[in-house]
Image (cartoon, rainbow, N blue to C red; front, side, top):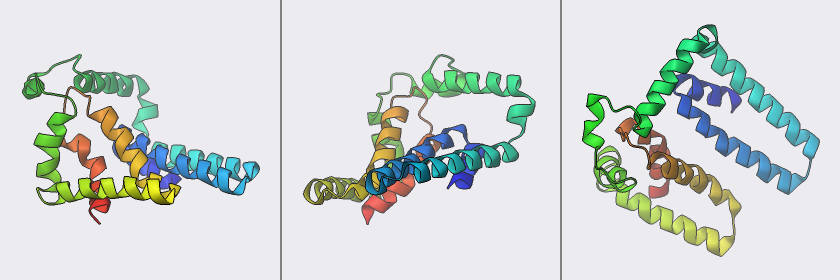
Length: 173
């Protein structure tokens, strides 16, 4: 998992958000097994393998850190609407959360799959309530947190919501 998280981080900084799922699993393991030393070892191995694999795949982030930081600041400013280059004018006056639900997700996931995924989401919540099976939280926490974060962004490029597609696809089932 650490290597995969490092790879996701190397391809896109927002890939670090995938840390939520493994860290959540570590917490569940701790609650279930109550083996703190073993859990800490898993966390250390996970974090080190993430850092090493991410660094090996994108060494320029360390080699030219100042330029990397400068580019990241610019990209964040575009995402949050502090810098508004001409290609983001289409997002002026758009509604947070509604725009991705109406204008992006139906076209990326499909007009049939998207409503089915919302039905699946409702079913997952009902199963969670009935069975109190906390494994279901793995299918809920990351996409909900990610959408709450990304849905508020000024720039709403469809590529920002690709991280939600695997979860939405699973919810269809």
